[in-house]
Image (tube, one colour):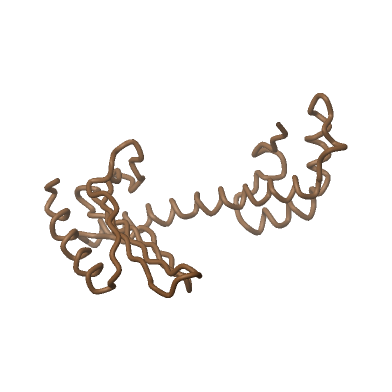
Length: 173
């Protein structure tokens, strides 16, 4: 397996640094493949390999920045004395996702909506998960406090979100 590590052109910490490294380190894939034994160079598309490595690093940067933003929002919410704080929100033409955390308990409403290209009927989902109250990190080793439920009406979804906010905002599970 050929792997580009963080020290090889993908040590960039920002999107701008990553773009600069992509332009300046075009030979990186050749260098990494040459270290592989036996050499797989004749079987590999080195341009695709390089581009995939840079895409992977971009995804890492995006995740890292998302975590920073969530921590900043949580800290700001604590300073303001907020009961709930939105850690993540993304809206696209085909749907949305939102992660809203109860500051004291770490209980979080994970909500999403989406419309499939093959169906005009939107789907709305809600689950309640446990986040680390100190950091806002998702505790993936814990089962959801309320498993994911799907709704076919925006009004019902909004009502269930309000109900979950009341229920799980009390610190009772």
